[in-house]
Length: 276
Image (cartoon, rainbow, N blue to C red; front, top):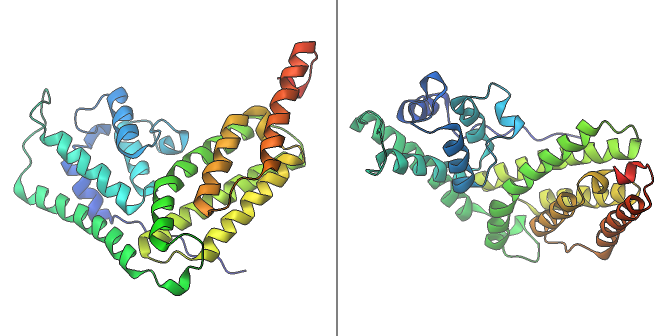
């Protein structure tokens, strides 16, 4: 089966040079942020956990993490984050303000933000009615995916890593982890497709098919609900909103049964993987 090509970066190397110059990213810094204020700023502006391991694969400095964070965002979120950084840079309330930004760098920076915002507007204007036959309107579905898919990406990555670190040996849990990784890939491609104005119902249905697989693996005993029941249930709900298919009672009863079973075993003081 043919695979979709990897989405092209929204910002070119030249664009990133502008970003790095405006945000004073030499030496691993980002403006005058401390690690704490940087993490809080990213979380507030785009809802991303900047401390996630996937953003520190090239190093843990603020600049290195930001170089990983920016490409992980949709064009709209990139524009929002970069515009927020500029507003912070220009704020008269800052202590120890950075060096003055000359007009040439400011114009280049604002132009790349405008290009990102235009990609969002162009994508909204280029959806063909024939590419979508779902119950929501195109604009409704685009809004849902833009709002929830980035959150689902983060949560799925964290859940998969959490389960992998437990080193379970059973094949059902291994299949569930692979399914999570596939969902992560599909959601990333869906976000990129929206930015290009190419979202189709088929892409959403493929995500729903994998969500149903994940429900099956959980019902067959995959350890997701043992290790992180609330996170698993939350991810299922987010994916249901993204695909427009309600969560059925099967998953609810499975998660609830796992939680109750684990609590019961703890109460009896038994040594069991369910109670650990």
